Image 1 (cartoon, helix red, strand yellow):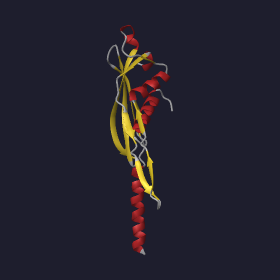
Image 2 (cartoon, rainbow, N blue to C red; image 1 turned 90 degrees about the horizontal axis):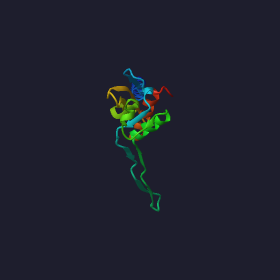
Image 3 (cartoon, helix red, strand yellow; image 1 turned 135 degrees about the vertical axis):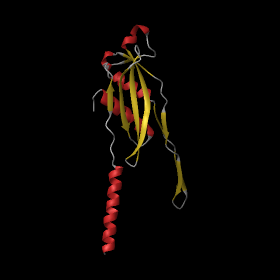
Image 4 (tube, rainbow, N blue to C red; image 1 turned 180 degrees about the vertical axis):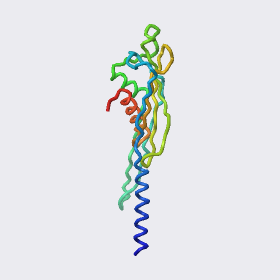
Length: 173
């Protein structure tokens, strides 16, 4: 009896430890400012970004005695970070331009995106992104925002990280 009681206590401790490690939360977003206010700018150019794409694997199989075959096609999901960032900036009143116009250079910022890390969290992993804003006139940083995201796919991770980073920049929930 004592053996089973000890085994139950040990298993409970192990499961509690695994549960605690598996329930790590996202790190809070970080915004760094470098003196200039982002709202001193009106226009922005987003540096080109590559798409993140996830395709669910095709599934097939047989069921029942008659060997009825079923087939489920694959589903593709993608996100272009530059486009997602652009949409958020437009929603906050900024104007996208294809390239820096010399007559508006002092009012234009360049937006850069990068994946800045991955870490194990919640029985999976999260992707961290950093979005940087640079003055087109001085080429000095205006600000940057960094955040993690975690979803069912890499596409979801990146989408959530971008939204969390930009929300922290504009202080929205």
